[in-house]
Image 1 (tube, rainbow, N blue to C red):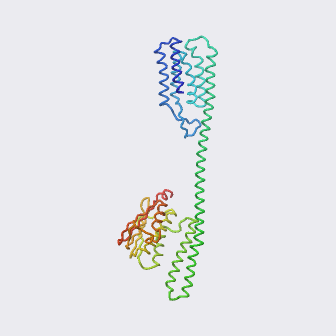
Image 2 (cartoon, rainbow, N blue to C red):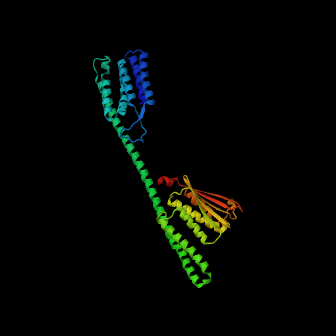
Image 3 (cartoon, rainbow, N blue to C red):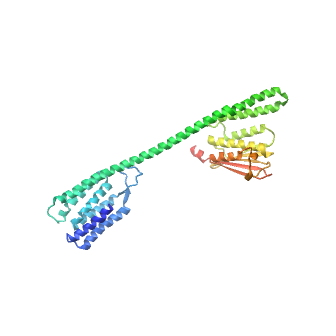
Length: 388
């Protein structure tokens, strides 16, 4: 199109001057006006078409006003010289693209008719040769066919684009379904393993403790404590098995933390335990309740085994968009930068960080030898709040 509007007006100006005797300045100005309107319009007068195509199509189509102005200037140029008639050929495509399925062919017929009768209107000839009639007509017919094919290609392209989008969505949904299926299968496997190993082992401890109580009445209190602890952990194991199949929370986070403290108090008098609640409690996702519950169990166990503390305070605080749990003890403390397996009973703190990081949270440790320990856990809650 650009080449056509660069060549045809130039050829028309040369022929108007050399063949029709039009003054050279007038011929050049006429060609320059046509080219100028085309250049300005092709730069600023394009619009995004929607003729049966999706919104994702980035094809830019000519605006109706621009094409109308270009056609009027072209029609006026044919009065100056019939040499400008052949600019009708690129105009055929412009009117078809700018005016749509119905108005486009009608405008095409009008441009064709003007291209045929323009020499008569300009009184440059009294009759038309067969070539002067067939040329515009054949050109218009070719333009109409080419436009129909091109339009069909655009529709097919958009249809393929939509199919690709649907295919990607289906692939994403399938991947998500497979992921959920894998998670469900893994949870089922974990539930089975816990039931067959940990739960059965704890149940055996309960039975053995009962037998030992009968055989050794003098150690009845110690065996009773062992039995109660094993029974509590057996209940936790069974609850975990159920939760792996059904993540609906059976307790709130506060209730879960109070349960952790209650079980810790059953194991001895020191340290003393306290749970503080700051802010207005909100409903958390089951996974978040479980994350903080398990984290609290791990931290409380560490305090019991390693801290030598007289007092430990758990503070559950509710903030806009997040929830935090601080575990503070007045024990012997440690250097967080040199934490070893012997201090935290394994990889407890590393696993704690991994658990919180997987849930989108963070762990902060503040401790020094002889100055106690503060461990802060934070989880975002905005996702759950937006869902509720």
